Length: 359
Image (tube, rainbow, N blue to C red; front, side, top):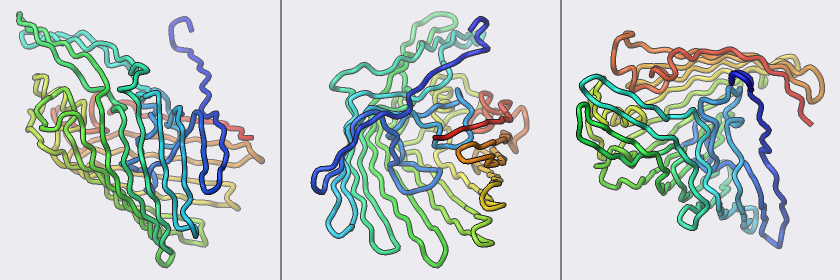
């Protein structure tokens, strides 16, 4: 509205119908789905697009955007597990700030990045997957395959000679095939979870800088509750290995250098550590939480704090803050390689206060 500082939007997050037929359960419509068993950091959980950097929300699940899907689940005999099939006729990209720009680095390059467009409704853009889940006593495990268009755009690159030369990046969403394995184990009060994904992109040889390289990502998590459930502590390690990685230059101005930073693939290997503390006090009426995420190669971090209070049935008040930081010096060009230290995030610390009514 007006100067663009006041905006409003109405988003129907989910609207579906479900029914059962024998051992099958069906759900058709706009849905939010979980794909994998890990908690919080889920490398296989890419069915739904997300709000990225355009909406400050207090929980990760609220970032998910509903997707139109036909979801069929076959329940194995004896409550042994399920086999799930998913079909999505409309590909939805992440909702994120526009990447469009027209930038000149004097004497080096003139760069034009065009506006991203959502994939068209077409047979070649259909998405879907299969997932098998088994319940084996205290252990649950699953295997999955998901074929979708990358939620983040890749780029067609064109080059025009001149001084400086003109490089035009045209965003599009290429096909990704993801194969996942995950498990959850509950031994003696511990909650142990792990999840791994092999993501095969359209750049099989890693030679096209406009397309992300294929990669392996995973997470290992351990959680335990103390004080009769009043305090829970969670630790996680999340590595990522970029296949066929090509070295890039920190602060470099080539197209490959800039795209590697954008893709988050400047490092061949990255490790992320997470510590999360959560409490449930006063009969779960008061719930504090603190979390730290740190990238070990990029040497940057994100810390978050929140406090939620249940005012009445369905009425909750929550406030919090998030702070981005880096252990690198302010002038270090490798800051641009980090998720939490690049120029798009390092100064985006924020506080929030929300009042929510659920019914």
